[in-house]
Length: 299
Image (cartoon, rainbow, N blue to C red; front, side, top):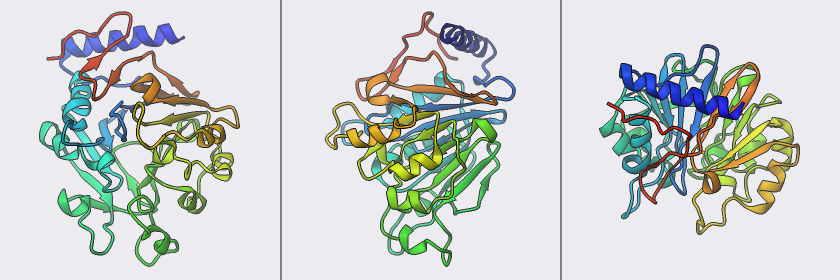
């Protein structure tokens, strides 16, 4: 099945190269791609209506993940148009690459969480529309905002503790194809978020830190697969061994960008499974394809 998925991806890449159209998932499915941006988050999502992006990785004096990882991936996939860019919060390892993405791709809409008082968040810097609990995103089927609450709603004080606590928590997909995208939410936010049991994929909060992916939350979400986006040999020790133990305690398969590079999941009514993409994008430089037949050059 894995080899077949790899052949499908190569065939899709060849077809897209010939037609100059973006890669697209088969009917009834959607893709969740955790791009390897080092110590940060960048999730590319493709559905029946096109591609969109949740976070854009870090920017440091030496490297911009937007330029060095996110845009190369999007160009290879033919995704010159993004239905939306969602900036979950203003931490540099999530929002740092956003300016480069906004310069290098046609972004139709930008969304962010509401700024905290006295803080110039992405909603102000990028002119983004703010999102809060209960909002839906029309860019993908079943895309909903689970956190943070709107001003005056229960939980507002918790969300005001800092950028991580105000992170946008999203649920994408429906039924057995649901994914929970936890941004940098910690265990206190996890306890306040209402989730449906049996997620196909959980993007672990805060890069698998010890303060996230609490046992009670993992038991409620009960994911089949887990994505951890972290940098190789990062200074924070992410993912934390105890967090990994909790994430895998119910038999979930845990995938890590720090070990395996970019992770590409296909989600449909059967759940989630890994596409045979074993490539990496990161500070080490460039696209690294390890498929049986490397994709042809993109137009």
